[in-house]
Length: 183
Image (tube, rainbow, N blue to C red; front, side):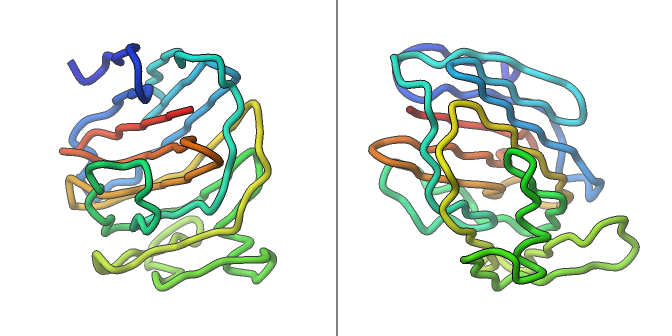
């Protein structure tokens, strides 16, 4: 059942949405407060709780589209082809900062812009397209928001590795949004 979440040892995994490779915009929101974890796709929310004593997520580089940091992932997600817009972490609009040069580090080989859109998305035209952003501050809570649209059923939407074995992954798998959080 993709709406369930295994709560044993290892990463917390939540699944939401289905058939999201319909080339329509989908809204994704991830909220983490201490051990509580929520994933919302198109305003449908699934909740889970982290195991273990660690409650603070350490942020290093955030990657979208492609994963270059592979320390803790045994199976590397497919690279994302599609459009991503409105990426904010704790209220900071990272895509806007990257586009405007207002961020200390932003490596981009995807393209800004697309026809007939409301906001400026980043377009990942090939499996080699990606966006990497600077290290973020560590937080005990996190609010992540973005919208995406694609016609492919699999692809990495967002990855962050932190100190030690911390990581969070938001991935499209067989048309579902999956999120993995390990601390």
